[in-house]
Every structure is written in C-alpha cells, then in structure tokens.
Image (cartoon, rainbow, N blue to C red; front, top):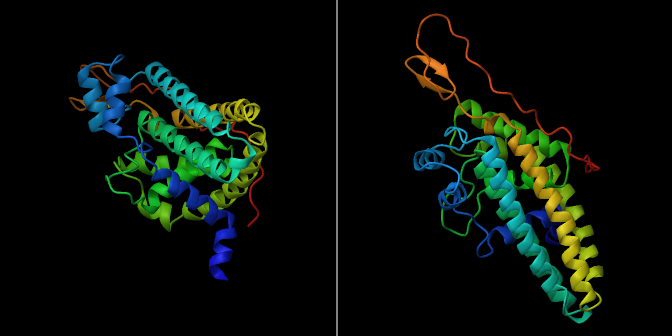
Length: 291
C-alpha cells in the first residue's frame, strides 16, 4: 500500500519524471564545453578561460553578451523541443500510451538542458559533477527550484535567491548540499515538487488531448510546446540574471577594490557599485500547494 501511495503522491511523481529526464542521453550539458562554444564569438580567450575556471561574472563578461547568448540558447532549445513534440503528435490516438510519456520526458529533458545553460551563463556551478548516471539530491533540489521559477511560483523564486546568496557569500564552486537536502531550503523544495507534480498531470492531460487527431494533433502539440516552453525559459533567464551571483565581480589590485580598471592610490577611494538587479518579483504567482 505504501508503494502505491508514493506513486500517487504528486511530489514523488514529479521527482521520478525529473530524475528520468536527467538521465536521458544528451540532456546533461558539459559546462566547460558549453561556455567555450557559447562565448567564443564574443569574448577573448583569456575571458573565456577565466569564465570556465571561475565564473562569467568573475571574468567580467558584459551583461549584453550574456543576454544575447542566453536568448540564442533559449531559441535553440525551444525549436528542438517543439519539433520533437510535433513529431510525437503525428501517430494519433492509437499511439497515445507510448507517445505521451515519451513526449513529457523529452519536454522535461529540454527544460533540464536550458536550465543548465542559463545557470552556467549566470555563474552557477556545475550541476552534474561526474559522468555517472546518478543525480545527487542537491542537484535534484536546485533543478526542482529552477522548474518552480519556470512555472512562476514565488516560493521557488525566493529559494533560488537564497541558494545564490549562500554561494555568493562563500565564493562556493558547488551547490550548498546541506541547505538543499536537509536545511532551510529543503522544505521549499518539497513544496515546489508537490506543486509541480500537480501541474505535470494537468500538462500531460492537455498534451494527450492535443494528440488525439493525427497530423492536426502534431501542429497543435508543437504549438502548445512552443507556447509554454519559451516563456518559461525566459522567466528563468530573467530571474537568474537578476541575482547578485550574476553581477560582475570586483577585482583586487594593489590593495584597492575596483571594477576592471587600475586606480592609483592617491587618497581615499570609494568603489563604484554596479547597478544591482533585484530578484524577479514580477514572476507570475500561481496557486501554491496546500501543506
């Protein structure tokens, strides 16, 4: 009985689909390879190397460059997932039991892909630190929160901001394991996962209806994917770009804290502060799950 209840639990259902999506071939993005390829046409080799060894923020990559690269990545992933969704809609109603789960997994897989790309551009550490199939709990937690931001939940926005703040203060190169798996962030992760489990069920039903008519279903399914994936990816981009973690770091030269330039020590110096982007408080609030 307990196992059956676990399967029906929205939180468990979402976590199972997310884990399956994270294990699909081609879903995991190599951080170094992606940053080198994405920044190659816009940055010097020294800046790219520093962005890889540290972060794009530490390398002082201009906001305009990151914005362009992020938009290019969003368009690429949106195009791919929409095409796959349309292809899955062609067989019609007889193939529904096979196509809907596969389409959902592909959809989530591309959400994982764009979440990684945006995270790496906006100075988050490597989410998948090894080449094995396992996904650690901290990575599952932060991906759940990223998905929550995509779906517009305010609690996920707040939690992502807190996690980013922890890493920014500690100059950490990996996720805060304890906070995400048993600390202050963990209850929010569970709450967001439960909410997303409910939304996932609604989305699956919508996709099943759109695929009921061959060919016409392909057009509707591809359009539905385009209409949902694109704004969700943009919502995550906006939120990550607005966090302090993404702000260009000040560099220390000859005892002075400066931003990309050397200042001679002729007297008191007050470092200029870059404009701080606020957290994405404009994300659409959806109904939160009841505890």
